[in-house]
Picture (spheres, rainbow, N blue to C red):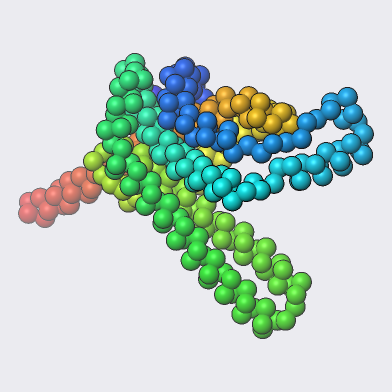
Length: 314
């Protein structure tokens, strides 16, 4: 049996974490190379937390005072120049993180492709391949996010209009609040649906001369949306439950805690990018298997009709 034939849910998760384990340093270097600048910029945005006296952590009065100091000391910058610099660094960090995430996802796709083809992944080759598809990848990712934002706003407008009409018709505040909660969940569901259906557009752009790859991602997830979403959610829960424990522990250390949490952010990025890559090739295998089955069925049907035609003649 081909190792990369369509896998079960458990086999997919096992493949993801096995690839991360066996190619840990390669993925680590790629993630640090592409995401390192955004992680460094994020350090400049860390607020100055008040110091924690760990000898008094058992006192409730101490924690009340600590959180009051936290609110007072970790607020926005006092000067206009400091506010503008902070705003500029924030937007720069978002842009760099976005570009880095696109490149590291493409590099992970190329790495998994090398593993499929029984080739040893090389960091230099993977970096060159990722930069070689830079502009199509960036355009594909940007268009996917634009579609997601558009779908989110359309869903919100439609659902909020429904809230307004129903609230005016019923006039019950409590019922309106319940409607707000339900409709908010509905809008979130719409966002998750489109996010899952479009998530593999950049991967398709990386592997083929197609851009933006939205139609290819939509085709791959047809009939497999819930399975893909399940794998994405389970892998994210496993990773972020582990990493969040350390990030919460480092929260009280200020800038030092932010530095210590970087390795866990790197690991989370490695797992998420590998998850998308493995899922992409698994969905391709399923799609190709479906296409082959349809082709075989078509040929069998043609052969049957041809046999019937010959019988009538004879």
